[in-house]
Every structure is written in structure tokens, then in C-alpha cells.
Amino acid sequence: MSKSARFDVVGHLPALHRYALALTRHRADADDLVHDVLVLAYERRASFRPESNLRLWLFAILHNRFIDDARARSVRAAHATREAPTREDVVEPVQEQGVWLGQVRRAVEELPEDQRAALHLVAVEGMSYTQAAEVLGVPAGTLMSRLARARMALRIMGEAGESAGAETGRAQRRLKLVRGADDI
Image (cartoon, rainbow, N blue to C red; front, side, top):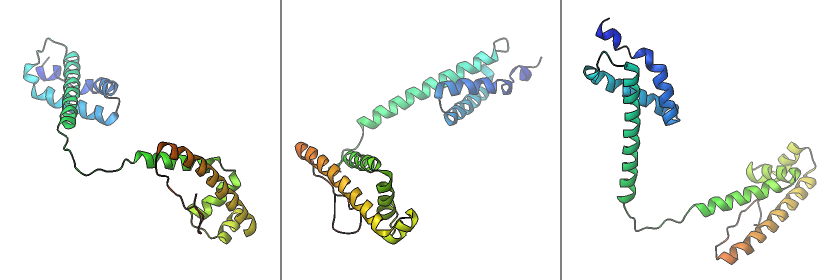
């Protein structure tokens, strides 16, 4: 048997890929890892002893490469946090806005379906009262009544949140739902 026949790595690719996928838990990272292992194996094929097990040798290279990459990522992350440039300008945190928008979304979701539909068509889709009433198959007066009830319910929910926000000293935001002067 020739040395090149004993160095047939192609037959081991499926097993190498399965192991890489088990280590990385991400298909693209597993593909990259197997690629790196194949490059290393061919670069170091002179160090492979024909009497040894090629499969085990390839798995060892794969495992060591995975460990080396993990250590390198850890070191880079540590350096990045240590070496992060400090900035003098301060940016307001966006988490509070995200929380507030989540609360608005949940409040809208709590509305009855007919009010939620009317509010969505007018406030989000920008339809006129006539267009929204036509879509819903109701008279324009019914649509306006649903909008008024939805806006009142959201206003009440907003006032409850406002009193809770005042206790923590946070500034409250206003959401304009429908054309006009009413805010929640």
C-alpha cells in the first residue's frame, strides 16, 4: 500500500464534520474548522507516521485547532474589553426606550380585537377613517368610536405607567396614536 493511499483524508470528512459541528454548534463554523484542519493536515503530512491511525490523527488536529481558536477568541475578548477606548461623550441608554416600546406593544395587544384593528389601520397603516371603515366593513362612526375607546384604554394604561415612572424619576414619553391633539 502506498503512502498516498494511507493518507486519504476524504473518507474521513463526514466524521470530521460531525465532530466539528458537535464542538462549534454552528454549521458555518464547523465548515471553517474542517477546512482549517485539512489545510493543517496537508501542511503537516510529512509528520504523519504511516503505521498510525489517520482518523485519530485528524481528530486530534481538529480538537486542538478548536481549543486553540477558543483560547484565541477568549484572549481577543479580554484585550478588547481592557483596551476599549473610553469616550467622553455620553449616549443615553436605549434599553429604556426598548422597554417602553415593549410596554406599548403589550398594551395594544391587550385591546379588544375590533379596537386593535381600527387603531392599527389608522395609526400604523395611515389609512383615513373612511378607508379603515371600508376595510373593516363598518360605518365610519363605528370606526371612530372604536378608535376613541382604544385611545382611552391606552391613555389609562399610560397614566398607570406614568405614575409608576414618576416614582422612579424617569421622564415619560408620549405616543401620538391618531391625528389630532390627543396623546397618551
